[in-house]
Image (cartoon, rainbow, N blue to C red; front, side):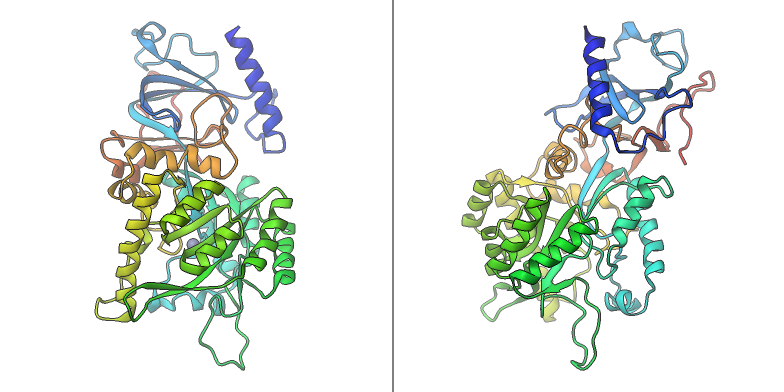
Length: 467
Ligand SMILES: [Zn+2]
């Protein structure tokens, strides 16, 4: 009976996943089997960890989770493998590690590399770098993410690199380069006066980091163009810049009107896609909510009324905390005061949102900071500001999967999910910073990195290094 259920799940999984690459099928057409022994399993959904579990992977899908248990494990076999291992199966011994679902960063910019002012800042990216150079560096960004256990990214626009994210996604899906699953948003949208490049002579036409629209007709057309060219999400900038006002408040300039945003949201929802809105606070954030945004990016200054509206509307928050603690300008400058004010407001806003039960997805704004930085630095920041370690982990697994409408398929270790599996040495529930050192990465059933599995010369089944 149990095997019939598993078979049904496998068959269903084949149906769900049709259209994705099945590169792992052997010549005979049978998907290879891998069995992973997890010392500790945090499955992304359950409230507590389980011990000594066996995860069975067929092709790129998880098909079974079972107690390893003393009975099923042969004590005579030095490899620590279960005695009932399916014939031909690869066995990966992570009995000394904590296994989790592949992590999801719901706010990245693979086409940015940190904006070091000394190296030309943001502007040089658009003014001097050929697109191929930026694409080559994006190839490194996605590899870095995968190495760190982030098997899925929602990339929140290319910053002047057009539809480059669609191309990088194609290259990953085609198996040409290693990288996470990408959900891309292409060019993003703002208004005249609402995005860099800025500060050039009015006589010179400079490129912009987004598609500029004015009026609901242009707004809808931009959304149509971006969706037509492969956007999985539409990204809209609802606020621009921030500064501290004379009476000490953090201010941010609103950009699109509610009417402009509504045209975008209406169009995008018609395509079955969703809209992410960059919004710091104030009027712009209010318009984002009134216009029907699906996720608020950053949300530095959420009022109680706005939190209530988010709960009512089911709006997500993708807070991206860490980046606001990185690289502050000197304290005695307007920029430095702004940077400090942004960080202090953000903490208050995030704490209120957690307490109220707003749906929160993990995001970092990587690219805004260099890809050499650890992506997982966001976890300790979330815990510092009121989440439990398990809540923080779930924000980067099952909750983020829900945001992406991939519930049950990503961000969870359970039958029917894609085989995106990572592992760390130690207990991330005791010290969430451990997630900065992911030692094992499997994506789509393929081992990309394995520094953790117990190696045993007696076993022919040890999985080696991936590509
Ligand atoms: Zn961003």
